[in-house]
Length: 262
Figure (cartoon, rainbow, N blue to C red):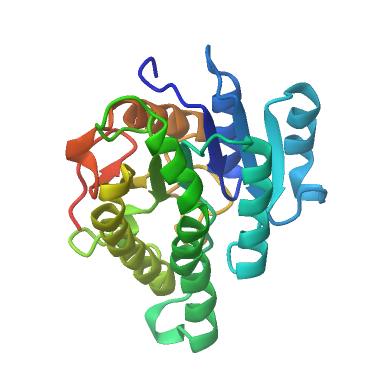
């Protein structure tokens, strides 16, 4: 992670799982960000207790209320982050918040498909739009013109389950709404990379691996359990982020830095 030097980072879905792991690793860096914004739906709730404990120990950690399906909440979060940053921009936005509903194809419903798609695809779209001015400010204030996570970047946490080529683990879990939402998130990432390149913002879809989290521990997989710990996944992802450059914008990569087919 030697090459990853960022002024500020915002992580959505930061109260548990991969999001919490990312926050912990950012705070533990030899040269940590000046600001780590941990965004979650209920900052004072039971599920955010570890975030609250971290915030009491780290002055550079700010817990931000953010519901990614609520435009008003997103707008308020962007305003709060902008105020805390003062005149500086946001270096890194990690759209990590996500959900899964364990429906097979025959059981999929309009309501469930809409809920999952709204969280996993529309949420990152709206969050990216709201924080774009702060990301642009970071890009404009950075020396040089090359794209990198140390300048300005949007990282969308995707899944190999959204790969139309691979359709990973379909026999164990069809989770159709989840797969469709992540395939759509990959296209969103590609569109963001094309649009935001002129603003100096790198955009990548990143698969964290099959991780031992509430979301990763999908039911009905029998003896098959996620092989990766949160720590292993996050360490790998941060190593990838430190190496990203101009050539990587608009790509779909794994936590090990390997290209995943769309």
